[in-house]
Length: 254
Image (cartoon, rainbow, N blue to C red):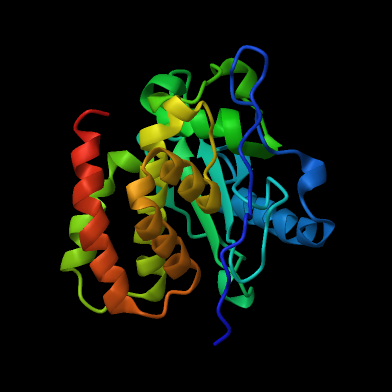
C-alpha cells in the first residue's frame, strides 16, 4: 500500500478585528461534483423526518473546500423539533452510504428555544464551522467565539474514549484513526488560547501543539503519520499509551 506523506493540509480559521473566529464555510467552497449527493441527503432527511425537521447542516472538510477523497469524510446533521436528542446517528430512508468510496456521517440533534443552553458544544460548531443546507439558519442567534476553552471539544471525552479503546479487542482501522485524531486535537486544545488560533485540521493541530511542547514534537508527528497510514496497530497502541497519560496530566490545569 502506498504511504500517505504528512502534508500541510488545512488552515487556521481567520479572526475578525475583535478576535472572534469567522465561520470558515461558504457554498462556493463546496465542489459542484458533490451537490447531487447533498441534495439526496436533504431529500432523505425530509423523507425520514417529514414533520420534525428544523434545519440540515454540513460541517467539516467538504463545507470548507478541503475535501480529499479516501481521506476526508462527509459530515451532515439535522436539528429536529423533537426534545431530548443530544446527538444520535440517523438512519435515513432512501439513502445508502455504502455506495460511496468515503465515509458519510448522518446525525440528528434537538432544536428548541433554549438550544444554546442545552447544547453549547453544537452551538459553537454551528456558529464557527457549519453551513446550513436547508431550513432556518440560526447562526445570527448564537454568540461569537474566540479561541478558548469554550471552543474545546475533544478533551471532554478523551479519558473515557482512551479507556474504551485500550480495553476493546478486535478494533476496526477507523477506531485506531479516531483515537489518534482525538489525541492530536486535544493536544491542540491545550494551547489554543495561548496561540490565539483555531483549527480542527490535524496537521495544524500537530504544528501548533509541537510549537508549545517541543519535547513532544516527535511523538505528535508520529501520531499524525500513523493516522494517515494506520498499518502498525501495535505501534499505535504504544503511542496512545505513551502520550495519553501526559495529555491527561496537562488537562488537570486546563
